[in-house]
Length: 301
Image (cartoon, rainbow, N blue to C red; front, side):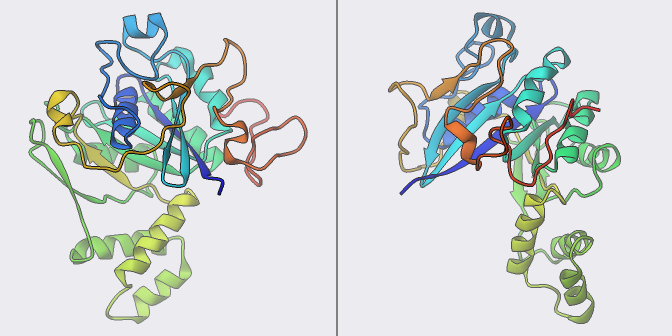
């Protein structure tokens, strides 16, 4: 049976932690045995000599791996404004985006540019508030800035603890938290009349499993954006706490690295898998999702 394909882009302003997050995802999926370091130049997607020397991403790269029957194309993109064209080239092949925001620096001008482009293209966006273990981290301030400067359709999914320390953590809320259920219902009712009717007519409220299904559906339709704070947690200390996952088969040509695809300078970005899981579009527009408008010139206007 042919596996499903999911193309996921990691976007952020410079130094928000995109490449480190990419390493963590590859590690958690069992695609790599050790988390690489940006400072040491050992990450999977920063393979150019200048990238490893400077500690920044210059060109977009694709790392492909499998989880169950899903083949994931993970695209690590540059964060520096000088390389914004690299980000623009990958937007038309993405199924969804993780927008990384630092819990210290918060929403930056580049973050607003990225979010406007993603909203224009109606791409599903998950917000990842990174580095809550750094001194000065304030996820509450970041969430308020997101609501004011990016989108009001943001739903906090849990509580943080021990901010600015090595023990910083995130605890998700669940069905037992009535206040969270009420906030989630109000946010989802903005876009769904059935949820609103159930909320008004039923004193018991909307069942939590239904809220979770509707949250997933509205996230796919790019109507709401659930953020998730997380500490950096990299290196040997983090690897001792790696979850015990069944080893996944790798989609890669060698036994030591997941497949990373680099494009020549100026060439259009193509995935390691033809079509990126999309049906063929009209002639001259390969890989475009049906029904999703592709910008005639630029997504950044």
